[in-house]
Amino acid sequence: MELHQESNQALNTITSYGDGFVAVNLERHEGSVIVMPESLKPWPVASFDALSPEHFDALVQAAPEVVIFGSGAKLRFPHPRLTAALAKQRIGVETMDFGAACRTYNILMSEGRRVAAALLIEA
Image 1 (tube, rainbow, N blue to C red):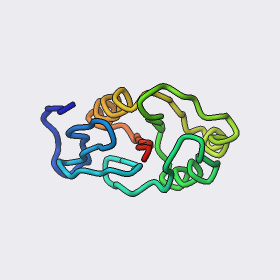
Image 2 (cartoon, rainbow, N blue to C red; image 1 turned 90 degrees about the vertical axis):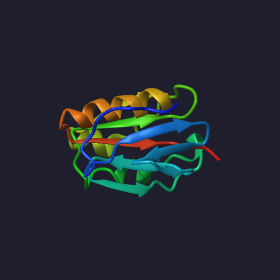
Image 3 (cartoon, rainbow, N blue to C red; image 1 turned 180 degrees about the horizontal axis):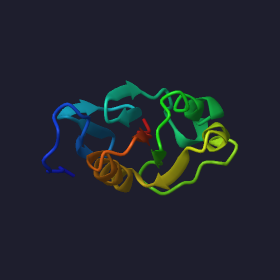
Image 4 (cartoon, helix red, strand yellow; image 1 turned 45 degrees about the vertical axis):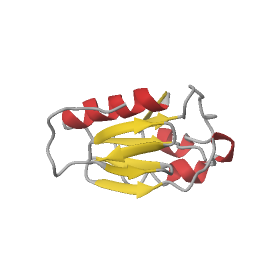
């Protein structure tokens, strides 16, 4: 799906997504990523079953208000032990399918919220 909206070019906006990819500021990524308004980095996880607490712990230092976890093509909730470090720091975690996570990230980012999208793209 291609998304169109006016945005601040200095901020990371999800411009399209589909099976096996997400485009941020028109740049296509085919592996899991963590997208924040001012940063973008690979997220070294290849499948839902491979998720570990360390994958979510990587988000604690960035200190977002909320993490939008895009669980892939279908909605799957991570075990609470995986996101415990975020909860301990009072960082909210919302789980959505991939498309909903991309759209929600854009809305929250455009509102000036400190949001992180942890987008799982399974190989």
